[in-house]
Amino acid sequence: MPALVLLGAQWGDEGKGKATDLLGGSVDYVVRYQGGNNAGHTVVVGDQKYALHLLPSGILSPECTPVIGNGVVIDPAVLLSELSGLNDRGVDTSKLLISGNAHLITSYHTTMDKVTERFLGSRKIGTTGRGIGPTYADKINRVGIRVQDLYDESILIQKVDAALDFKNQILAKLYNRRAIEAGKIVEELLVYADKLRPYVSDTTLVLNDAIDAGKVVLFEGGQGTLLDVDHGTYPFVTSSNPTAGGACTGAGVGPTKISRVIGILKAYTTRVGAGPFPTELLDEDGEALRRIGGERGVTTGRDRRCGWFDAVISRYATRVNGLTDFFLTKLDVLTGWERIPVCVAYEIDGKRVEELPYSQSDFHHAKPIYEYLPGWTEDISKAKTFDDLPKNAQDYVKALEEMSGAPISAIGVGPGRTETIQINSFL
Image 1: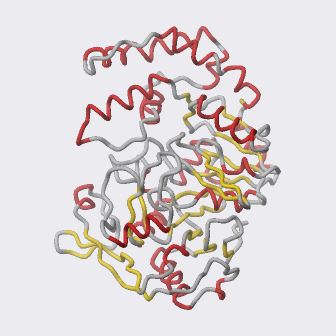
Image 2: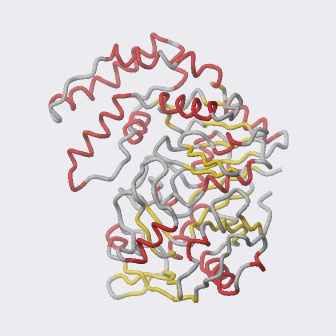
Image 3: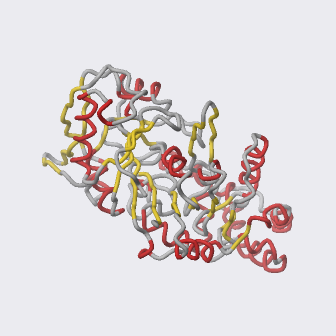
C-alpha cells in the first residue's frame, strides 16, 4: 500500500484541505510535515465548514490517525485552542500524535516576528506575524525549544536562557523594547506540558512501522511549492520546505518509501503576501475571481491576490516535486467567462521563456504570454464524471494537463466534500 505526499503546486491556498479530506477515509495516517499556524485549510463536510490551521485535515476522519511531524513548528496555545474548538463540535481528537522533536513557537518568537517586519518597512516580507520564521531560525541556530523539553524543566530553563541571551540585546538596543524575562517564558511553556503529554509520541517510529505494515500514510504539506524556502520565490517565501522532499525530513521517512506525489492546482492562481506574481490581475477580472472564489486566507484573513492560471509554475512544480498526479480545484469558479487566458510562457527582456527563471531579478520582470481558451456558462457543480462537464471545460482541463506535465486525476467542481470528479484513483 502506498505512502503519498500531497502538496500545493502554486503559492498555497490551492485547496489541499479538501483533497486531503477526500482521501482521509481511505488512509490510515495523515501527517503534517512542515509549517505552523501560518497555513490553513478549509474543509466542508456536509453543511459544516471547518477551518484547520495546525491540525492535519485527517483529524475529521474518525478512522484516520492525524500526526504532527517533527518538521512542524507548534504554537501550543493555538493547537490546544484548535483541539478544544473541534471537541466542542463533536470531533474526536484523541488519536492525534505529536512528534516530541517538533519545535515550539513561544511568545518571544511572535514578538521578534512583528518588530522585525515593522523595522523592515517597505522591505518587509509579508509574514503572518505568528513567529514561524524566528522559530525556524532558532531551530537552525540550535537554540530552539522542542516539545520534549517541556518534560525536563532544568533543560528548558537552560534553553530559554540561551535563546533570549542574544534576542534581548536586539530588542533593547535595536528595537528599543524591554528585555523578555526568561522565567516568565518558562512558566508559560510549562503550563502546556500536561495538556500536550497524551499526544506526544515518537512519530518517526510510528510512521515507519505503519508503512512497513502496509498501512496507507498521507503526508500533507502546508503553503505551496513557490513558497518553499529553497525552491520558491525567495525571499518572499515561508521558512520551511513544503515541497515533496520536505516530507522526508519533516516526518522522518526515507524517500524510497514514498510512492506517489500529488500536486494541488487551483484552476487559476492566487497568492497571499508580498512577492512577484506574473499573472496577477488588478482589474475587474481579479476582483471577480476573488469574490466568486471566496479568496480570503483561512489563517490570515487577508484577501488573496488573484490571477490567471500559470502553466510555467505548474511545470516547475512537476519538476521539483516529481509529481505523479494533479488535483485541480475550483474549476467551477471560472464558469461564466467567455474566454479564459492561460499563461504559457513569460517574456523577459524581449525573449520568450518557457521555464521558471532561476534568477530572482528575471522573475520580477517576467511578463505573462497568454493563450486564450473558450469558456463555458453551464453550472458544473453537479458533475460527477469528466463527461458530465461541458466540452469547453473538458478542453480547459486537458490543456492544463498537457501544459503541466502530469495527469489531472481529480477535479474540484464545488467546495463540498462530494463535489469532486475522480478520474484516476490516487491509491
